Length: 120
Image (cartoon, rainbow, N blue to C red; front, side, top):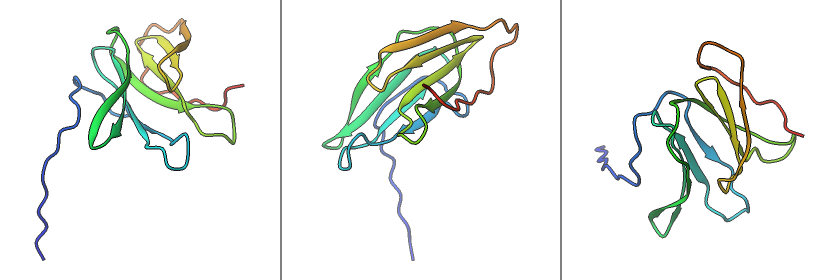
């Protein structure tokens, strides 16, 4: 049994850290899922697939290196809010790219781990 694999590039992003790519849940049953990626240039890119092509949903402006990306939302609902840690700052985006949260922590070191439990 031979297995032949072929490479397919859909989108190019900058250098990334571990745990900075997530799969957003589908909004409807038949809707395609979206991929969110944060890179070292501080860019958050969300894209989906349409007819075999990658279509960007949103892309943020460059900033500090993104060290962590997590999904969150109200309990018992799809987790579709995007939270990123860049330096000592936390930013939150909706699935359409609108920034709804931004705050600077009083930590001197960069944030390396983060967990989002619930959003009211």
